[in-house]
Length: 441
Ligand code: UD1
Image (cartoon, rainbow, N blue to C red; front, top):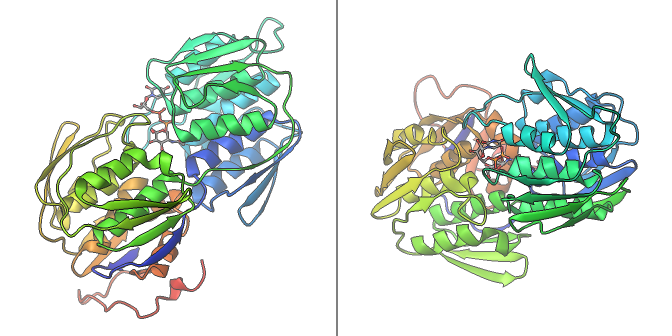
């Protein structure tokens, strides 16, 4: 459980970690390599640990020291990913593309739905079939293999019905070792797709167009070792920008790639917050005196990211006027509304729209985190609320934020993680002067 005492201003500089969604897919991408790969700037997250466990279960050797991860996939002992691990981490489905193209066979359990929606994998499957794989789904497992004596997947043209990040990544990885040219149309343009393409290129893959809606991959027979640093996490950066905004605090963030945050920065400016690019990789947030409502619609990149929707909702609860937030990517991604309302927010949901009526203040309350970004939104609301907020369901937060509490504490926030229930008398304990978890995380 996390206890947060709100209304303490933040100040200083925060270090942004490597991107979770790059790290996860690049770890899977290392399976393409018949040599050892080094990945740098890997965040320390539960999801990254789980992905490591999946690779280990496939027979891959991993060695982590600090934020450097060495992956030795010279020998892959198994082509089947274990269900217990895949069911805990959807991103582990990514191993299907590299396993299939490298070994000619892959068996990966269907990851199933998750807290934010059903999240099918039909586009991944159809794309692999277009590349010449036989794919059958039996007893909840996707069996993909090269039949009829074929030794490699065959390059082809694939149109994605929606620009799915995961499907683009799966098919791009599969096509790197295919025979001939693959063209992915209506591809996702997210920075993490570009990061994966750059990682594959650093291993010798021939990929062009990543970051546009058409990616062209010319297959090569094998890939070689590389040493690759992953990009800073734009969602973590966005979350800290909202932390500065919601507490009316001036903050500096580095390293960041400001271009990856264009939609988020533009929306913060509409609310009345100033964002200065102080150096190519450093941003300064200057809060406004007066924050106003803004409408948000989540869209594939370069549109406003669904992974920032919940955090912005927290900010808009305290901005003057009515904001309309429309979630277009995932069908079940407004569950934080009920929790924010427990803290005094005024939000109504109609279908995939949330109508946020700005209120003058939030008040601390016990709340439950329902998914990863929802938990970040509750932390942000807690930082701005009067009194103490307690957040349960922290396993969501640990999946995707590296040391969020420690980073916030260093900026001056008053919060601490506790194992015990709050005081049975119902009285709010005072904020600790020096929370024990501040020391070093
Ligand atoms: C990735 C990110 C996630 C982010 C999302 C959208 C990772 C590990 N996760 O998830 O943080 O919120 O992109 O930016 O990188 N779809 C299908 N069929 C498919 C695949 C997707 O219909 O085969 C639909 C999904 O249900 C969803 C939409 O496409 O409505 C976008 O999903 P997608 O881009 O695939 O998200 P993920 O890759 O799962």
